[in-house]
Length: 290
Length: 264
Image 1 (cartoon, each protein chain N blue to C red):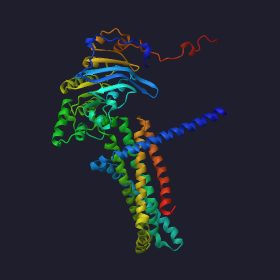
Image 2 (image 1 turned 90 degrees about the horizontal axis):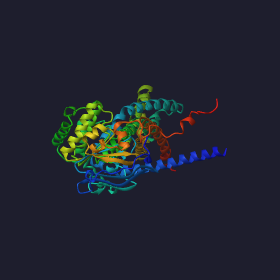
Image 3 (image 1 turned 180 degrees about the horizontal axis):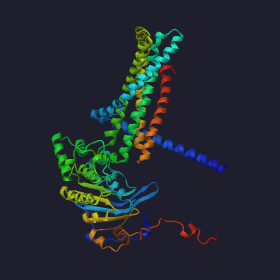
Image 4 (image 1 turned 135 degrees about the horizontal axis):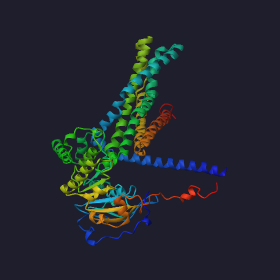
């Protein structure tokens, strides 16, 4: 059930002082990005800027195009139109080698962790280090234990992914994602299916690791409470367009009907409860003679 | 009537277009697997791991099946040859049947069922659980790290498994013919030695099994990589691997036999 674009109020930018600026401090910039899958527009007219050091939240309904934005930033997809610039490079124009060179400075936490099921926790975290460095085994061991310690799972190094709870798997995946101290961290629905304690732990780690590593983070989620707590700036995406943006404080006080419906969890509003259908009376044959 | 015909033609058209698309995708996939093979050579441990996964873990089924095929071949062969007073040629019959045909073909069919299905399931699940995407996002090429080593592991394993299958078959034939029925041991081995040609029989058998190894492993990898990322998708992909591989092996066997043994 998606909001149609014409159902949504035209987005009005906030005061210029709260908007991110396009400058040398910007790590990511999306300009007039459109992405089509076959003839269907998944994203259109996306303009987004992410400053270095910030945690940016991208929020919206399922299927609204949030993860597509993440994939465009990671170079997994190429925009149909517009540009995606990461660390000064147009990522969609890079060749295989250059793309992989840039990705070495990125980390991504997948929705369900995407851990290598045949490997132990230790080997999962050691994987990027083994692949991209020629460090001696003793140093790799120390680094892996440090990363696992940072997510509170040093004691679980010998376990297999099948032995971990959802929250633990997400933390191991986080340790693996930060193994090479990335400049950019991307989180794809990191809170999905987690209990409140695990959600709090992951949320806390996202903010803490971002600040400790001096990284920049993009957080794709529909978890209002957590993202409003840790993000510096939030974009609301609906039906492939940005419908609202601002700091958590501004959005909390926003009168925008979409923002209100989303943050308050209302069943009806700009995003209708009913999927478009023929008139109810006609479907039920009301008024037709017995 | 016309609309029914129209629908049928459209359906056939869609099937043809889908098939051409899949063929194109499979060709491109093969190109990627081959072009990313340098890691399989530079890091032989990756290929050795896959030889273990495809080859070593298939040993039990190959050894047991080879022995039983040899036992049956010895029994049937003896009964037939005895009618013509040529029971001493049992060694020749068993060896030629195994090295030319049964060894490569049956071991390839077994390889498709055991290793091929396992490869498809592994790659399909890795894709469904985003492990391959995670690898890409860690700047590690899944073709170089996983798919190419698996391919070469399968290609190397297949001729070795076929050779073991044939050896076990000969042992089975010996067991039933010489030890149990009482065919002369000297005749069994000397006739075999005299009639089996290194190039004509053994080398051609090895070439056949290597070709089957390429076909089965590529089909298994492609089906896994192409599988929809769902439990049902992976399950269908595994089935397709076994069916397509079996048909491919039998068709290739006919073509190769035509060139190798009949001079076509």
